[in-house]
Image 1 (spheres, rainbow, N blue to C red):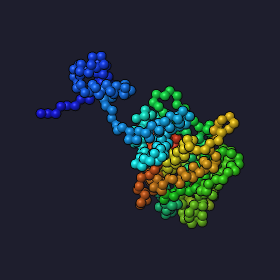
Image 2 (cartoon, helix red, strand yellow):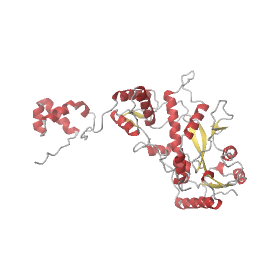
Image 3 (cartoon, rainbow, N blue to C red):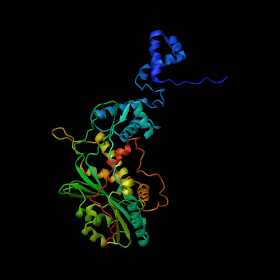
Image 4 (cartoon, one colour):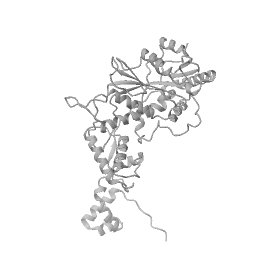
Length: 426
């Protein structure tokens, strides 16, 4: 005898059967809708849940919470953070969940991305965001890509430049507050606010540089002020200041002198090297070219509009760096020690604290991430022993929405003018 075919009924059908059963009884409903009476009894018990889901839903799929008490506390924490208008990301949810699990002696809890999204679904939480427009490529970008790759390949081959002497530099604009335009919130909430210290428009610049062998040079931070802050800064970072808080000819000269020349093997200019950066005006002034000419250095300037295709830092490093920096800011906002003005306004993090975040975030970028970025940019072929997973596209990518957000958050293109060609230090 052939087995009976199972049927799937949507919520609308189930609720009709429940309503009939309430009025005429379970058996009458079973006869009317040609179903088993036990199904009617089951649906009547689920009536409250059925009325909260879409009418087209046919089943309650997904596992129940393995640690319901932990999720209760975590949901309450999310509600409290949102009540204070603090942003809540999946990163902070996982960090808080791990802390709660440790406090509750739940040793087997991992709190990965998949668990986080299942938790959000179970607790009716969602992510709010907005889309942005990414950088547009020039019409002749393919020809420019080929020309740039050929230029770099020829210089590397001709001068026998080793990976540890191939460097990419880029300026990353940042703010003292690093909120996201998305936050976990109860679905259906009409107003979604995010708490900050009011310094999300107060900017400064971080100058990052890394080498094709995976090594990273110390970051240089340019604060927007006339004098250097009088604070105890951490080691491993160079602090600068100017009225604009941005790279200019003077700061570019200082970066070459205090960071690039002092890199391993660069002080005596004995080994040929290649420096890659975009066509920002401060990078290609006559004074900078003259300073470059004094070293054993070849310069490759990325054509305008192509940093997303040719700049290793933009391709695979800046995203991971900013993600770590934002996680540090979010943790400070939720758990750090804060001071307030007389009017009750929360003060921003100190210069030294921000510098420590930058040092830690930069140190956390792996060698394989940097090498993979240079490979994706077409500057080098991948080095042996660096085929492991990178952390540039980490597991915090949230389905269907994070790409658009990152297009804005990690847009570090600093070009000020169109530039067609390359500078070789002459």
